[in-house]
Length: 319
Image (cartoon, rainbow, N blue to C red):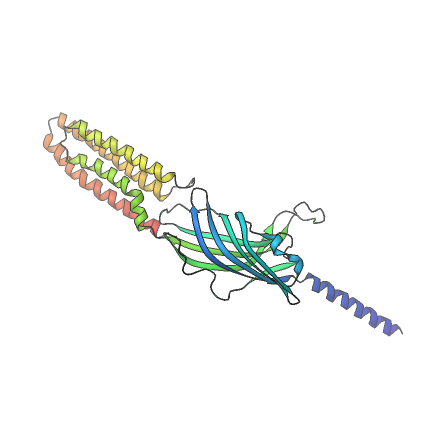
């Protein structure tokens, strides 16, 4: 009799452990995504808009992704279409979403920049103890016919993971302020086709430099013309920089735009300083020396300016 009771207790205990272990195993949400468009990339506001199809397959109906879907990086998102198919085998949810996403742009090499667009999916009510994501990678994840104007898609990576939050969200039953939620992450790497955009942005700056540069071919004693052109080109270069900066987010780093404009302003200053020295030589009746100085310094500054531009632009293109 004792053996029967002991056997009964063992079976009961093992059943309890089995049920408890089964309860702790999270349900897997098989998730897929198909992006139909990415548009309205706004560098000033650090955001972009995307339209996409999202589908999920899982067993537990209480997950209710129609109500509990969370996109942490989204400024706003709208469900344009939703269908739910429930059966004994589980739940299938299909949604079409339009999301306005917030992101941070790297503008150090603008306009030869490469950006990463990030999007992640979570369930707002169930943590990683209840559900985890798995990627449905059958087929493509974006429409190969859609193109970002002026951009090329370099890579498209989908990875499930765990997102940690160092808080208990006010739940006193959770002693440690740490919670983890299943996350479905999408990372899209894009690079800009900047050849035409570069000249569109910096042509005014280069013209300003050339206007200042032709001062070397004006007679050294014609001080009014030489200084008038230099001062005009100086304000033109500064105006060109303000126009470009108005379309970019604030940055504490020294960007390519800052480097090229700073370089141009510095060389315009050197041209003005050279004109002052030439005028001083003329006042000393050294006209030939002044003309020779203008020709030599003109070639030196032009080669140095072109070389410095080539260096900064090549460095930005290399990333």
